Length: 316
Length: 263
Image 1: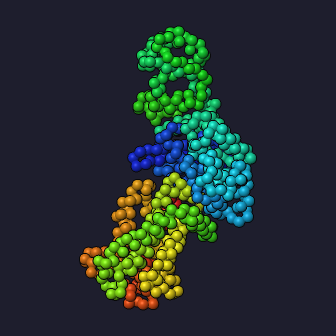
Image 2: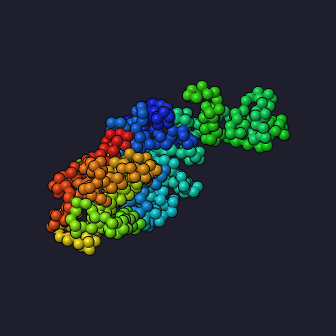
């Protein structure tokens, strides 16, 4: 049995001349909930399409449960349950018909299929709606049907593209609760793409993607620990001027990110007092906090984004 | 091979179920060509006598088999549009990641589209007796068989386009440049006899010409003279079978081409 559930080696993808993935090497362990975190255009959707066998990488190797994606796609497909961002259920079919159809695609049939479909629907609280046409269900329930469908054939690997799209916060919590339960009970490996920090925060490990490259991988705690201390964010009427003033006075250069100044300081609370006293007229708002995943994201990608153009691919 | 029967049947069944549950599609694929037939056929009836046809064949009657071909074409066009949408961000996404060979997906879709087209085409036959076309059981059976071949060819042709397009935006152009001309130049709308030479050549080369000819010949199975100056039945059926097989082969190939990893 291979060590990892998914192994990516120098995976590249080009759309014409545009590079969507620039050599991603990554492994996902058995039974972990793994997030691909990145903004739009980071390459996470391309990576998702490659993992779900919809797209062939321009170069590089992908193996899933030891099966090479290039050589044994059908073996890979049998192991996959995929939840797409856009609905892949048919609104004109009932909830149950959607599931049965899916079962047939995976060679399931007869009594065993019906029983399994009923069990999955009951598990996801959809049993009462089984005979309703899918288009009559609320957005949240339709989303749940997508999940039911993806789980029907008991895939050891579940891929989810932006799973919380269209879910309210309560439903999002329930959804994660369910994913965790699934991992505990069936050992399912779960990989999801997201651009929501709070969603990534709930995962075991997170891969941060930026402009087609893998910037960093680690647990949310590890990633946050890469931020040097507490995070202080300054809003100012003239951020550039304030940046110069801070540099002159404190000998540290704040990063200018989207019109705000960001500093990472140990003992941030003391620094807040000092800086507020130093520039009472320049600063309009100060926020201070322990680093979040978002801070880690800005720390890791912001450097690239705002740094020297030549260093764009030089991140670890 | 055995493992592909279930997916094919399931995809086929889904096309039928969807159609039954969407009333608007019925009017789209059936009513529109029939309205065409009534308006154009009725309007042109007094002015035009189809060349190369028996004197008893007026234009409304001439246009009737052509209208059946149009019903088959419209169903194929609809299947094409929904396939493009399904593939990018709909139902087919889930099918494409399943361990099902692409040709089987294309076959399920083609079978579904063909069934719908043939059922609608057969419904049109109910009008035939009112046009003085004497329908016998063998004529209906033969017409149904030819319709199946023509529908399979047209639906497959639609799928070739659908699997190569990433959005429905360019579809109108394709429809106007490829699909409708194939129908216009098939003898459905006007006979080849008496048409300018370049049009006649195009019509000879157009595979649908033989499908429409086969439809005409089967409708007039009991009275071959009434079918007029057309390619022989045997030749027409042979070309139509070849057309259907080639179009489906191309559809399966196109579906497979979109497969990122060879299945």
